Image 1 (cartoon, rainbow, N blue to C red):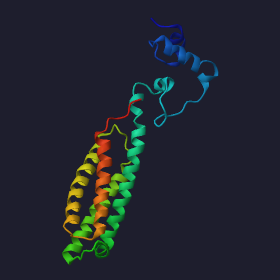
Image 2 (image 1 turned 90 degrees about the horizontal axis):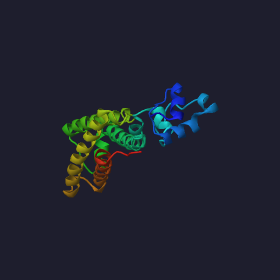
Image 3 (image 1 turned 45 degrees about the vertical axis):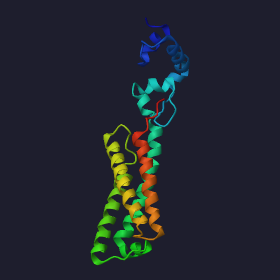
Image 4 (image 1 turned 90 degrees about the vertical axis):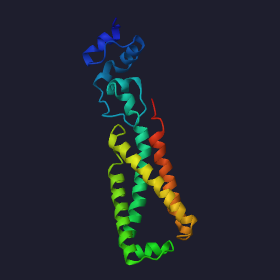
Length: 196
């Protein structure tokens, strides 16, 4: 049975099979001059209300993950900046960067350091360009998985290097960076998405 407010609102293309309480809310919110009031284009980063759910449709609850997107955006941008700094340093000044960590590079080591820096720049570009990808996009999950796996490997490698004295005390900096970014992205990978 369709209640009176829902039947009256049928001409504005609202669902007509809503419960009476919700219809009453919509009737009180949309009647009069409100029917001609401009509506926002998106409430992706706004709290959901009954009226916004009807405006966005069935996918509104899923769009509330915008809060989740905002948080991971910051981590992706931060990691991109860190990686591009190290990447440029290894490409342009490999010997200087290596000496900062107490290491000497042979010609072959210089070549490997520059290739290492190129990989860093590649990773930073991927993270920076993908930072605004919607959470529903499978490519974002693939990137997060790649970051978690690569940071876990990097953490083990750098930790062993620090414990064995391959480089100086500054070697604990990449150990910490791999740990922090690995845990942060692992949180977004395994944490339950927010619900409205």
